[in-house]
Image 1 (tube, helix red, strand yellow):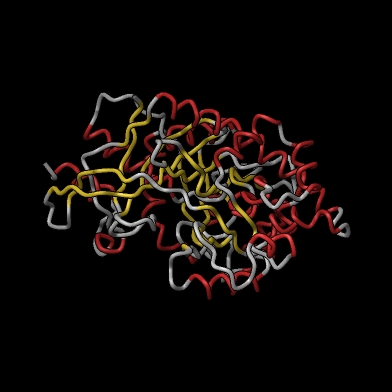
Image 2 (cartoon, rainbow, N blue to C red):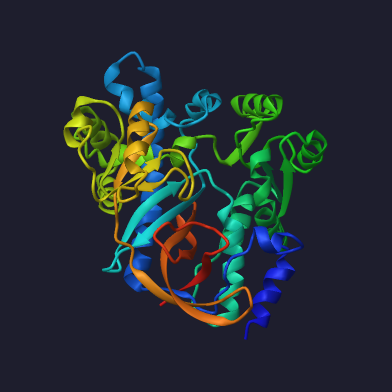
Length: 419
């Protein structure tokens, strides 16, 4: 039973050579069912996110212009806390430009209701895994109704820009993700679109890719290049002058959990409430607040310390770094390390959030172990939803056998079907 699943991964190149160890995850013949009510909610969420992003972009740009007025600080904090400083000026350029691609990690509670764990408007890595899980799902249920798929909608998006190719320029620190990029590259080629993979510092590779582009080059996104500041500067200038476009513009705040705290405004800031109400369509703001768990920016202000006094135990929350993916910088309040981590977070004054813990429903899934034996276990999961221009592109599930759910060699990744 295991043969076609392992063969697919080997053919994809993800497990080629040593990658079989570094990029391993458990394969499964199971799929994740998305019921009609959940599908309807995802459609609404997909429509809401561009509305919210567009409004937030305007507010952050205005906050930058009025930075001398202290009341605008919450919007500046949301745009800057934990984010590399070179992106500060880029984030307020082209305020009408928002991400065309977006990933949202959802938790499904014990009542089968979705809650937002994080919104990631600057992450292209998950599309490779989404493409793989779609193929694995097809092995299990070839006739099932499914979402369109990340590669198909991405190819349509590229063609809508009158392009046949796209440049994915990735920083040196993302070299590990090259195999996932190659999976997406292969899937786009099947759709008639060329994806040029260029690593930071490869000027010859970038020049060759640009020759396919014409007057205005189309890139996936602009990552932070720690090792080649010149290449980052050149692309930043080109963006400022309108010579390059990014499907995911350099607005890193679209991936910040500080924005989730701002949208919720659980701290009750009256000015923030006024500006959000004036700028964001009521239904979109209401939906986001329903889906985002109670969230606070961790800062040494009287308002925050009244709710979470120093020295008093914090229960039922999870500490998260504002700008980090997966479980990086994440500690639950029942972890012995939490008190020290919380004190350190307070000293950073805004680089972390406290978010109410959502009880993640446990699910039973079958999986193949490393010896290719079929097993069954209980998994805690994240429902990873990819959006493209406000439409649901695909849904995948990442699961682990403890509540710290993230991609890892002991995780499971499965595709979704529509009921």
